[in-house]
Image (cartoon, rainbow, N blue to C red; front, side):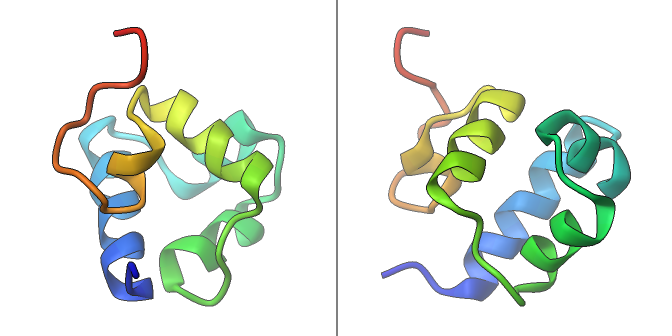
Length: 77
């Protein structure tokens, strides 16, 4: 099972690679900045809907986002 630490680090890494703020990612997902910040802080895991939105936003697979693989390729890419 993925640890909160691993998930939050991967999420932060993806956001920084794109040069986005937490508020920008939250806005892209249709959630508040504080809501998104809790994902990176490890205080909350995203819902299934938000996990899918995060994977789409960062153009990675859910398996990559959750640390199940190091292959970033999203399905169909």
